[in-house]
Length: 192
Image (tube, rainbow, N blue to C red; front, side, top):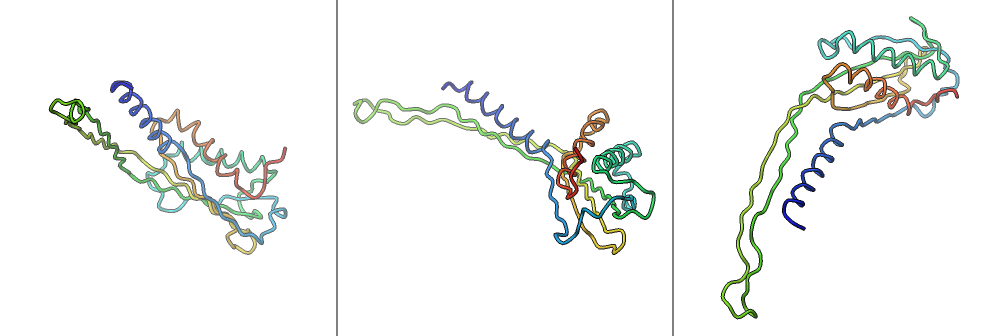
């Protein structure tokens, strides 16, 4: 395999791995195993955390709320302003992160004639270079806590982590997809 082809394959492979790590959304969930989720028929939203600040603009808050409302309706849950069988609250944390990648390329070297080839020489030398790249990105974490409306005990939690896309037109699509992925693990399944 020639060097140019190897270099091209390494770069493409690195980009695919890098984009998979950054673009994938990781969702973890936990819920109260003893809770009877079949008794819940309504849900109300308690609000966002108090210190949300500039982590979300009003457009993105609306995108999240619309997506969660749609997912709740799919589960035949009635949305109430207050007093739902379940209540949920959303927390958003946005952190600046730095990703570092390294690529090492090796040039030269190879076998010369020596020992059994009867001429002088042997293994040839070469050199290598390593290139480091750093790129900054925003990582967003969404936490959804769900509580029993009567006992106020927590019954479900979902935590989703993903790279934040700074283009609003991308967020219009990615926020509902992300919420759908979070709700996929919700103990009340969508009605078919």
